[in-house]
Length: 516
Image (cartoon, rainbow, N blue to C red; front, side, top):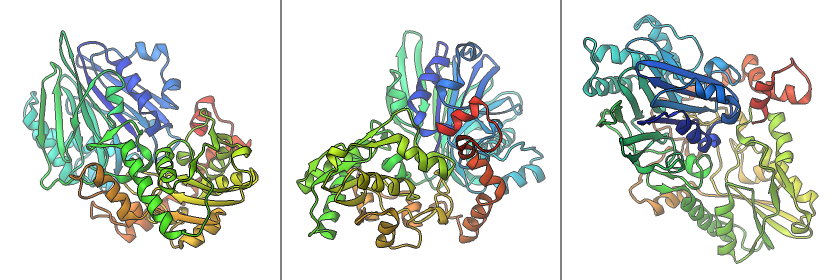
């Protein structure tokens, strides 16, 4: 889960990209980067930290040009702390290419080996994005003849990328002297959409992960990029598009709608807020079926992402809706924190339970999802400490039972509280009196109710169906072994050490990464 943006304008783009990245900050808080093209020269600044911390006035001044891309990073492959793995990435041949990526390649290690053995290219980091960049560069080299590059050669190169690369990817890329190239994987797992703005100088174009990053800076939303489709916008603002995949099919990541995307975004024709309301309708029906004799005095959401679902649950059950948890907005999203110790501690920093709303009541707490169970356990305990009589916990998403390998940080089965456990066992682990999960079919139906054209979804973390067809048990075992290796653990838990006062001293830059 990262956020990407690409802009072709008639005026300087550095501020436009900065503003768009602020609107995509929820998609990645570990690193940020912007690259611009001024004629055939590239300019880039990237670092660990949030957008507001990475870019100062001096950095913005060093990013001239009317075309550019940007990215906010949340690491799912490679190192969480390495500044070298912040995006965008650059390669000088052919032409000069800069690329940013949202997603996760499942065959990047195989490709990295091929890069060395066949393509004779050196990969300097453990980032799958650098691999993707070099695959694209190699395919461009094969498809272009001479010094000129035309849309046909670009689209041929993207077709080559689709043939070689597996996994999820939404890409924005600058090609020196030519323009902006964007494309989406053949399954459409990760989102990408197109926007435009009419100006006296001509049309300006933007590609972004979510519609909110387009509309929030004054552009008009045009459409979603189709799975496998490539968009090329030249420096004069002419747009070219072509389907570059053989058998594309739309399987958008359903966890985007559950949690990752902003509620005011529209993804693949689905307003995120509306889906979350429908999730509440289906969840309420299941609560009625499963807990017909359990008295519920009040329904409370875990702010902010579960609010729409909780409101609908309260309405359908005919129970009062109350805000009992208050959020400290200056603490980051605990779901994407690298270390368990930090995550656990930060739940208490992030939320405060107001005793008056809990005392002596049977409280139904609605959350968007339960992944590791750490947050849920802390929340249930907070409700009990605040005086709740009974705590019923409901998840607007189904149980997360399988690792996600397409760009969401839940790759090991041991980290998933629902893996290999019944609902009652999970309820005991989080300390709730009762636990109700959404059904997988109900979640998918909630989305289809809003957009009936959507038939299939990437819902592997719920149903274990990996749509790219290359994820085996052996593959999952391999990534788990890598993740559980001491070096990987130490990278991910460095934040915990820093906050608890142990380990090596860390700079302010890294401290921001830890708590953001």
